[in-house]
Every structure is written in structure tokens, then in C-alpha cells.
Image (tube, rainbow, N blue to C red; front, side, top):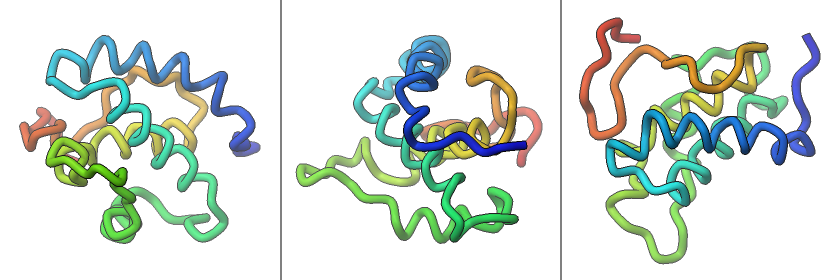
Length: 116
């Protein structure tokens, strides 16, 4: 399967916005926070540096590279947006549409039924 290019971001951004509206906005995650996290995961999943590695192998490294905005807030902390980043990562690594819930903890640390 051919990986999407960063030039495809505008097309998938609309789908991520729908996912945010349905899943993350009700949890208190702003679109600005979610957009940055989705894109970070989506772009890094396409990076040659992470080729052949799955989420469990890269999450700790991505946490170290998570760049908070100049006016960093607690809401932009990795622990609060990890699963949003993961969703961006998983979307880029698969041919599924955004919106399918990943397993594992939700933003804010709430567990999903199938820990992953």
C-alpha cells in the first residue's frame, strides 16, 4: 500500500475534524489541540525514520518529540493528547477512514474496553 504524502493533509484534515467533533470535543479537547496532535501522528507515521515500526514501538520516542506550542498549556501535554496522536498515526498507517476508535487509553487517561 502506498503511504499518503504530507500533501494529502488537507484531504484527511476534514475527516479528522469529524472524528474530533464526535469523539474528542465532548471530552474537552479543542480543535486546535486535536488538529496539532492528529497531524503530528499522521506525519510521523509516514516518516522513513519510523518505517516498519508500530505504535507500541514508537510511542515513547514520539512523546519526546512532541512539540508543544510556544504558549504551552497542560491541555497540550503528551499525556492528554497521546491517543489523538495515535489516531493520526493509525490513520496514516492504514487504509481505514478516521473515526474508527483505537483501543487503549482515551485522552485524560480513561481506559477503553480493549487496552492496547
